[in-house]
Length: 433
Image 1 (cartoon, rainbow, N blue to C red):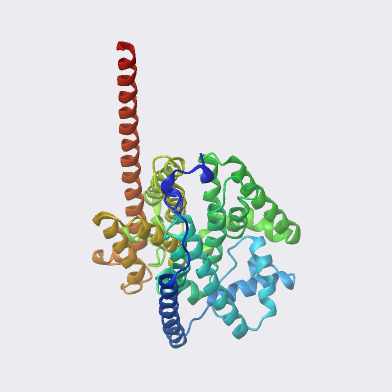
Image 2: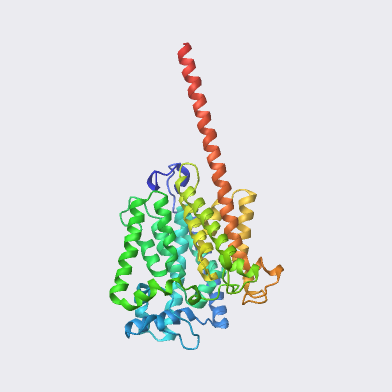
């Protein structure tokens, strides 16, 4: 049973069959209030951005990659002048970056900022759709508020600061995960996201393990087709990337930096082993991967027992990918947007409300940027937790999901036992009549 056959609690109307009243003065006033709040927040963000002076250095790297493709230069020998940064994405991504070489840098900064703002709005929209909350009459207000206030979340802020593509990657995945399993093109978004940035490939595994074989095959096929495009257009670069550069994590950055929120980064800082994560870090990442993906798959399969099963499976897969990646910079954690929407939808009791509040505080704290020794070497013990906030929050969410799954399956088992008992009693009564 998949999307179309989900139980009543996973449908936007709660299964009550109530009409969707999208009109009325209350709705319009709510949208107006949300729009005003978003406008004030975005104005403050624009002023802060102007005063802060965003470098958008990653945008400059993408532009340099696109220029290398346009001018038939060696893509992976490219070094961004003044920054000594290199290309780290597959050749297919560089092909997509080629149009950026046609823009002057000042114009490109404006274009990328506006595109990222639109992608943030789309991320919020798809997150609300995935969680099935709030109801449709409040959907527009939720998107406006989420977009206007979401720019202050540290991963979103740094995505704008560096001119990153993380919101686009998240939108491709969410676009797939909010579509029906009966859609023959489901998987295309995940395949494209994987062809651009590899790490979303964990969603292909998730689809296959949750028995969406066609969607998984479409995702894998799309990834291979995009890789073939890269190989035909850039044969030398493709050979170098897939045989060498992909496996060299040092090209991406230094593991122990405080903005690396992966398990490997956290353990490296904790063990004070800069440049050498060691066996403990690899084992910890492997354990996080097994437990995280296991929870995600179990959630995705528990559509009868777990409310918002697909949302939990999707978010858990994303968090697992961030935890096990050798390097997960803070701007990679834009998955905090669908995570927070999901936690807000689930915030009914004091435990879930506390979890939502803590996770929200973590992503608004910018705590890793307040720590001393931001190169990750010799971080004091009392700064270890603040420099590991995202990884810690992700582990807490996955543990919470594990408890939810246990409780849900227990309730289902108890309900099944009660149903069997009632059936047996009915059979006995019929025999004695």
